[in-house]
Each structure stands twice: as C-alpha cells, then as structure tokens.
Amino acid sequence: MTPERLGVLWGITVFAGASARLLAAFTGLPGVVLLLLSGLLIGRSGLGLVEPLDLGQGLETIVGLLVSLVLFDGGLNLRLPEGTIKSTVLRISVIRLVVSLTAGLLAAHWLAGLGWSVAAVYSAIVLATGPTVVTPLIQQIKLAPPLGAVLEAEGLVLEPIGAVLALLLLELVLGDLHGWREVAFGLFARLGGGVVMGLTAGWFLSEGLRLLKPDPSVGLRLQLTLGVLFLLYGLCEWILPESGLPASVAAGFVVGRRPATQANQLDQLIRELARLAITMLFPLLAADVSWRELSPLGWGGIMCVLTLMLVVRPAAVSLATIGLPLDLRQKLFLGWLAPRGIVTAAVASLFSIRLELAGVLGAGRLQGLVFLTILMTVGIQGLTAQPLAKAFGLLAPEEPEGEKSETAADSFSVLSDPSQ
Image 1: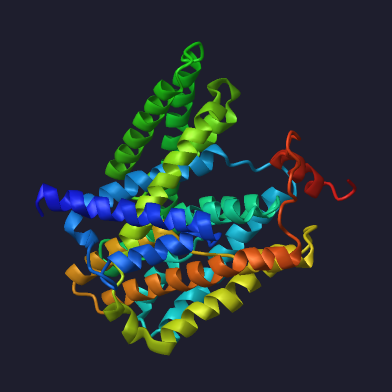
Image 2 (image 1 turned 90 degrees about the vertical axis):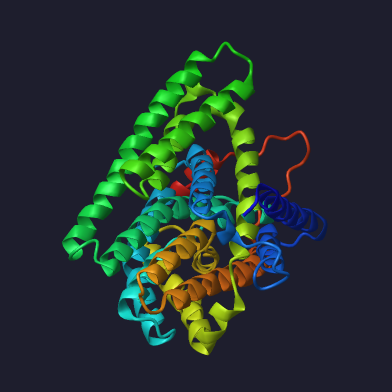
C-alpha cells in the first residue's frame, strides 16, 4: 500500500471515530456503541473504505502500543483497598476464570459448532471484559461507586490473563506447545515475567518523575512516561510474547501509587491519550468485520453469545458475591454488564490469521464468533446500561457546584464497613 493510501486510511478511521464521539455528545448515546457502528460503516461490512489488513504486520504493533497506553491508564487509577472491593474483584476474577472458560468452551462447541481446540481459544479470548469499553461507558453513564471501580478492576485483572492464555492455547493447537503442563508453565511465566518487568519499569519511571519534581513542565513528564511505557511494551513482547499487557498495568499501578511522582498531573493527559487510542482502535478493528464471517454462525452463534450474557456471567457473579455486603440491585447490574473490547478484537484478528496460515479449520468462524460477541455485548449492554442503572438507582447523584465530590476511597470505606 502506498503512503498516500495509508494516510487516507488513518484519516478516515480517526474522522469516523471523532464523528462518533461528537454524535455521542449530542445524543447521549453510549460512545462505544457509536464507535463500533462507525467501524462497521467504513469497513468490510459497509462502504469498504478501510481495510485494516492493509497495515500488514504493523497492525499488531500499532494495536499493541495503543492498548498498552489504555491499560497503563487503567493501572494508574487502579485502587484495590482492603475490604469489599478487593474481595469482590478477586472472587469474580477467580470464579470467572474457571466458570467462563469451561462454559465458553462448551457453548462454542455445542451451539456455535467450533471444534474443541478452536472453541478453547475462543473461550480464552472472550474471557475478560474490556477496560477500553467499560471505562468510557461507566464514565458516560456516571455510575455510582463502587460498581465502576469493580468493573474496571475486573477487566484490568482478567484482560492480560485472557490474552496470554489465548496465545498459549493457540500455540497448543498449532503444535508449538505440548501438553497442559507447558501451557500452565507458560501462563505463569508470562504473567509473572510481565508483572515483574512492569513493576521494575514503573519504579524507574516514578524515580525519573520524582527527579523532575521542580520542573513545572507536564509535557516533559508525559514524554518520559510514553517513552518508558512503549519501550517496556516492546521489550516485553520481544522477550515474552503477550507479557506486555500485564507489564503495562503493573507499571501504571506503581506510578499511580507513589505520591512523589505527582501522578495526578499526568492523569488527565494520559486519560485523554487513552481516549484518543480508543477512538482510533475501535473503528479500525470493527472495520475488519465482514458479514461473510458472521452469517454462517446463524442462530447457533447468537445462542452461544446469549448463553454467555444471560447465564454464565450472572451465575459467576452470583457465586462470587455470596456473603459480600452488596444488595440485589448491585449484584444484578454486575451480572449484566460485561462488554468485550479492543484487546478481544485485536487478539481475534491476529489469531485468526495464524490459524488460517496453519490450515486449521474454523479460523474464520472463530473470528466471526468473537466479533459477534463484541457486537452483541457492546450493542445490547451498552445501550441498556444507563437505563438499567437509573432504574436500579445506581447512578451517582448530581453534585452542587463548588462542592467537592465524594472520593472513591470514601465510597470504598463506607462499603467495606456496613456499620457506617
């Protein structure tokens, strides 16, 4: 592809994303839903103006770097104090890791008709809710704490696990790994290695930011942060593929927890860059969806996704929240909202290509089922999240001007101590 054509591709993509954001601001509709629709409009399923595969191998690099920025932003704001929030996130993560993997495997095989090996890869890919979708959604609907914090933290914990596990299962299918023992070892090695490298890079970055404390320039802090983050991601992917995602979360967590870094000065800029990354990535990856891959799934594919939405997720959340001081409305909302996001779409696109090159049957159906999952969860749950939260009384109250809003930490402490 010529440089001029690449310029047009990126121009159309960013313009479509920005237009979707503008329409969301005027109409009040969920921005992530409109971003998804804008990608369908400009891509294979619509006008055919954007073909993501024209980016070649650069697509994986671009997506990886931008996703690392989004996850770093999530780690920067991640807070898991002792008490109910921490217990809820950890329980949901562990139980969903077991329940969703098993149920997703069975549903994909029996309902959508995928082979057992490809169904296992699908189950791992769609394991996690997407922070790239959940975060802007709960910000737009102004969800009252602590539910927003639980949903964001759940995605940040499970997103790297799902991506790494999906890669290892893919390597098992392709014959690069032999047996579940190697899969388990690879999972712990890549997650553990990514976290260690991320914690180390986060410490060095925080020290660098501390040395810049007398410097009033926030721009220099931002440049240093992006330099360290992108170098961290590149090194992690070179040493341990897919370890860059947990490394990004860990690095952001360290920087956000060290007060000497003045992370609050970076927070707004990083958050805006993360939103820009989402605005670029969602239309780009949605443009890769084709009706040719979705139509063969038929009602079996739809029933598979509905099973995950209406049965598996609520069941896992119900088990995870037994004994926790969450009322029925909060449990129902947690059991309903679980949209999949950019990492899920990116992993599906890249893995489908590898499976097709290896001659594995069902590669196209895998990508189609993953994107059907994204379309249904983002579309249905994105459109119903605010009305449901309003009906349940879970929206944050409007704050009078001049008054300081209740902090997340205050909300956590109230929830953790039912006597308050």
